Amino acid sequence: MQSDMLKIIRAAQFAAVKHSAQRRKGEAAEPYVNHVLEVAHLVAEAGLDSDVVAAALLHDTVEDTETSAADLEAEFGPVVTSLVLELTDDKSLPKAERKRLQVERAPHKSVGAQAIKTADKISNLRSILSSPPADWDEQRKREYFDFAHAVVSGLSQAPESLRTEFAAVYQRFSGIVQR
Image 1 (spheres, rainbow, N blue to C red):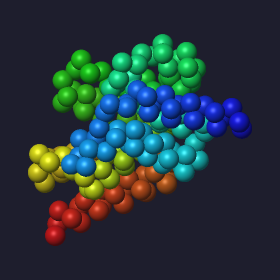
Image 2: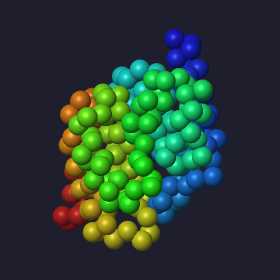
Image 3: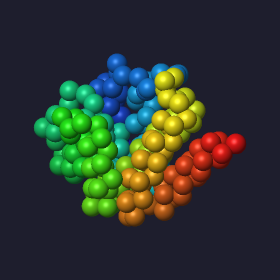
């Protein structure tokens, strides 16, 4: 139990350091670490184990920082690293291709990666609702919500509580747009 807590705290600290100079895209420009903390919180509430919670905290480190898979493996071991790599987009590909691959690969992810990906999309949608990027009009928001829905639709092994929360957040946006 103590080693599980230590792993999660170490992952939170690692993520905070790695993402320290980053901000969310929204008008409020929240510290990026708030996003990974929210994703980990959602995953922990869904009852997943400490490796999945740690991976939730670290899910963007390889993709968005100078962290390598070897760095993660040295700090957190192969299970956490494998989950993070399952969630890491290849930034050398065009954005449209990365998005297409997220949708295509969603059903083939492990249960832990499906949980993290669902929580990630929940966090992103909540962020768009509360503090959208200044240059995003309703059409751009709709495109992201629909993309997130396409990804999460393929995540059938994600915990029901996360899929239910995703549906609720998605519905909130739909209700706002229809007004």
